[in-house]
Length: 191
Image (cartoon, rainbow, N blue to C red; front, side, top):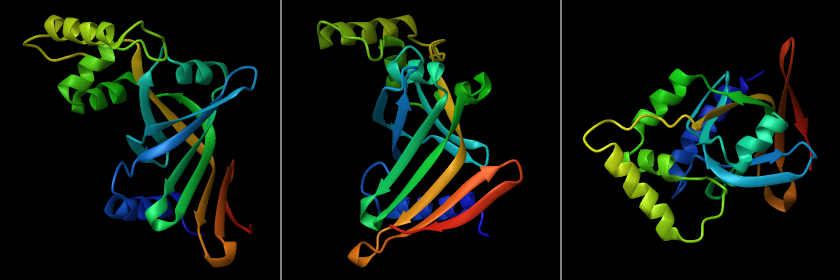
């Protein structure tokens, strides 16, 4: 059996060569405590056998959903390669050191934007957001921008990974990997 993370690395490496924009873009599906779903695009910022990492404002809807229901699904769709990868599993926050290390790699404007944003909350105008951005810029002028306490990352620990390859006549190839206490099991699915 092939290691699903090795297969992911192979496909992801190919996508980074062929996708015009954001080869690391993935749909993140969550559900709140009532089971009401929500999906949005986020960017993969780290991955390995322990999971797939994305970052967000912890005061926004996606973080609220994950606090109430710590399970999610990811979907990568690389149209130019005619491939998809679906990933499902439990989600938990990354540790502070991991979040701090990633935050330090962001552009200064992105760091300041994290301080200015009230993610998922309505504002009367964009001007208010831009004023908050300028306030943050003034506050941290001449010094490194620290990671805001309300901003961090999540890691999805996969329990299911499905690799989908488009084929002619809708005779797609689907490989499903499921994890239990004994490790990973591979199976083939048919459309």
